[in-house]
Length: 185
Figure 1 (cartoon, rainbow, N blue to C red):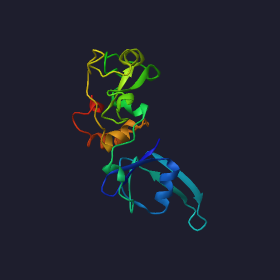
Figure 2 (figure 1 turned 120 degrees about the vertical axis):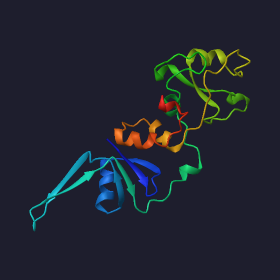
Figure 3 (figure 1 turned 60 degrees about the horizontal axis):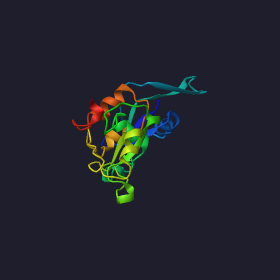
Figure 4 (figure 1 turned 30 degrees about the vertical axis):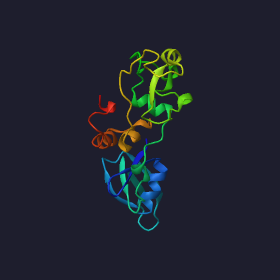
């Protein structure tokens, strides 16, 4: 399991391994936490007290002194895995639900015709529909979109990264996801 790192204002910054989070706890860099501790790291026994050191990891941590994320000022990086997750593995042309290996990144305006590789120009398509469309515009191929593309917010992007997200983390992230997002349905 991973820990969701926030800056002190509550903006998501990264997914951390337990080891990375433990370093932040040990260096007193944690400003606040959310959720019940889900993992305990046990250290050595202190000679003076005979007590064993331990660090309880929480699913969400705000890091003191964290540099505000620049991701708030730009759109998230586009990848096939995140695109397919955004579109729920549904072909935008035929509406079929497919396994990821049968899906492709489809450019609404083809790259060969100046279309950019952006969230707003890319949708999920099955191999058959993508092949039928070729390098034409959807209307030229007599195809229509079953849904429109959109650029995910930073909170949506944290969900789309495909991690195993704990309930506390998902609740926190979904609280800032727009109501129209396909991640809500």
